Image 1: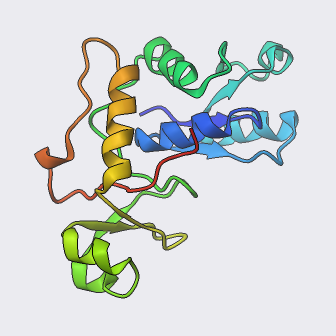
Image 2: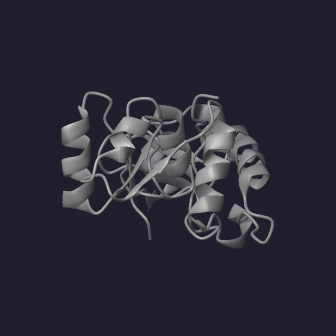
Image 3: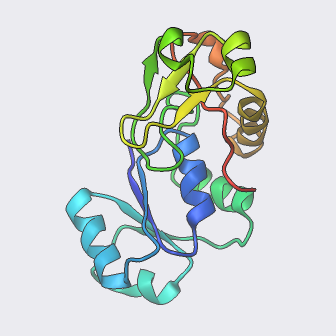
Length: 174
């Protein structure tokens, strides 16, 4: 599976790649040299809007993002790199990029809003930042947005296919 590193101009794209389940580093504090170094060390494709960065010989694995709007950016990445969007969607923390793990409902009783606890059965937690995820209204909205950018021959997985795998209920910034 592809791994990415986004430059400082692509924070929203990084979040949406995480929604798709792709390991995506986003550190806006990195300069170009450090971005390239990390891409080499960690085997990541550089996603950038900076054509000068992409032209550097040491930045061989890169994709120059042509669009300003995040949905068009995501569509470009999915189509040009032929990414799969259904197998791993909603499996990463949108904040810190760690893989989520399922947690028992009782474990989140006092950690999520009471209404959420009462109306949901499936939860996940990020092992790094402790953020909790569930299949709420944001999940459905994100699923619809993903369907818009998926390649015509792909279908975005419906979480009901795998009820053991919780899905996040927080959307990246539009």
